[in-house]
Length: 83
View (cartoon, rainbow, N blue to C red):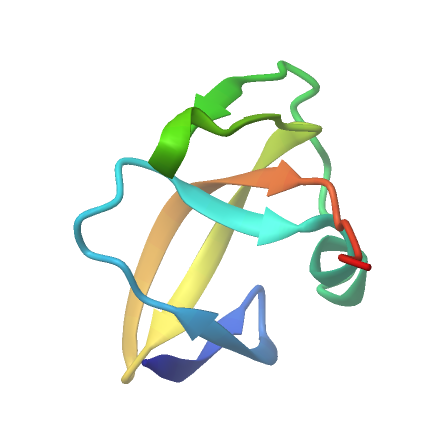
């Protein structure tokens, strides 16, 4: 299910969900990819079971998947450690 991709030239793993309306990145991964400039417009997203999350903003990135380059908007979500 996970795929090796490059985001802004940094190799990482991604879960590709072709049925999703938005692209997400955890805040800790955002810092790992060299923290590109953030658009601070926050978006409220809802998912399965009605769970909601408020994004921290969004970034525009270049993503390389299987030697194909895509420019896309990615929303930053808080990194929460479950206990």
